[in-house]
Image 1 (spheres, rainbow, N blue to C red):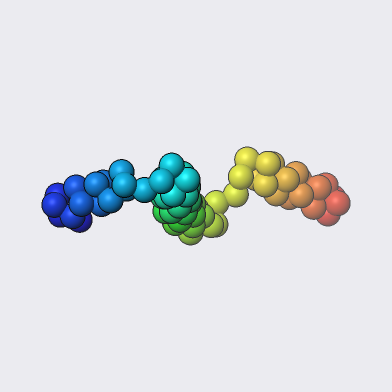
Image 2 (cartoon, one colour):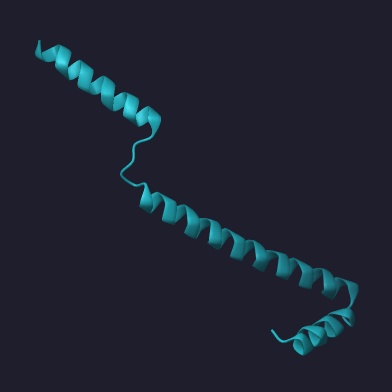
Length: 75
């Protein structure tokens, strides 16, 4: 957005009634939250994709225990 356009928007916002300004703030806050949430979702998805085959420590522990039990059962 160019500087002139931004200044025009600010001037227009100043001419709004207090209720309209409140509604504008809420709309901008909602939009900012949506953008932030989309970025967090994208990052989480990227990380999940990168580490999809990695086990968590509890999963690793459970897998080791299952292997140990299987070995003991074969004896």
